[in-house]
Length: 222
Ligand code: DX5
Ligand code: ZN
Image (cartoon, rainbow, N blue to C red; front, side):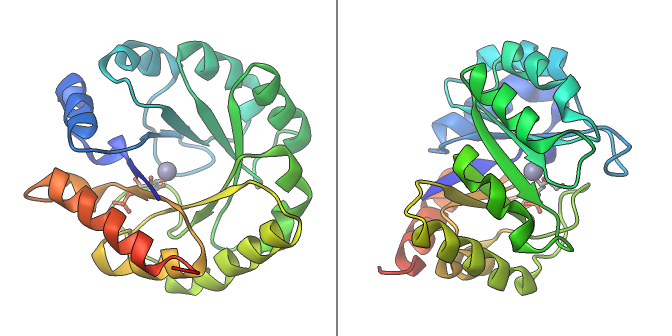
């Protein structure tokens, strides 16, 4: 069970201390939301910023590319210090080529589905990825409500991963909080992105440990 705070909800002006806080509070990954104002209606940050902030954390950087043409930028993000890169199956780039390029450069590759995209769309890429990201909100903004109707999709992907005996994690992103993390874990998710719930918490360390306990207690077979 891994917790990945999304820096989309942090204070960008205090990035160094926010990253130190994330690490000190027991998070497992740093989730970096990259938006281009084209694939989604919001703009965040690019590879030069990732390069600058990378030195403030020892945690793996989990870069979520919500951009139209990821193939043109994955090398920049890898050189900037990304440890894993997630691309959207709905993007314009050739998915297989982009995933291969990410892997050739020694980075973990992942593929994501937006809420309206069926689970089956990513089945043919399952052999090429270490993680599938199921969006539980429409990508673009933090602080939205969790879409519980995405849980059958998580279950379907989990069943296919198990059927094929693959070692692929399922990440959920959007609206993760105390109640929804239990639902997502029950459906088979094992990596949880959280923005608002963690950065608004009185005590981030306590919140992360509660998230981990709740997720573990609800994961199938537990
Ligand atoms: C949405 C982003 C998410 C978002 C999650 O497009 O991919 O990572 O920041 O934020 P919360 O947890 O606030 O929904
Ligand atoms: Zn994200």
